[in-house]
Length: 109
Image 1 (cartoon, rainbow, N blue to C red):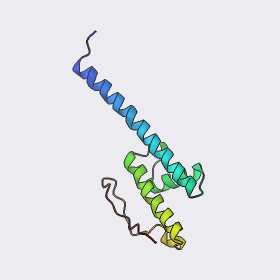
Image 2: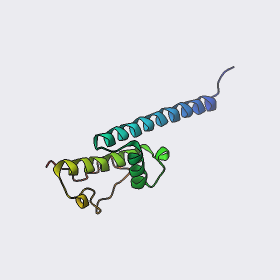
Image 3: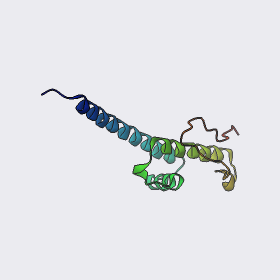
Image 4: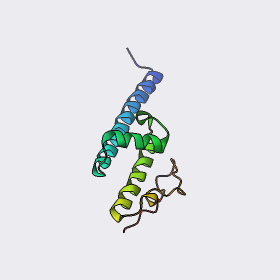
């Protein structure tokens, strides 16, 4: 049996979706590892991620996982520098899902 172009396209889409799911899972697991370095358990990282993105943990897109990573970087930097708790995540910042170059003001201590 010969595959049609539509069949090949559908198979390619299916394979791509599988790769994307695996990639998101790897990113989520990396966030959990970062959280562990901050002294948080898995559930804390999941709850923070859901609060930051407004989406269930398993439904977070790659860009949303990266948004959470940026926030965790802010938290880690602030903790390392000994910043007051209210300075950890500045409320005036916005996080643009489409921009990988969003600068969050992370600076050395």
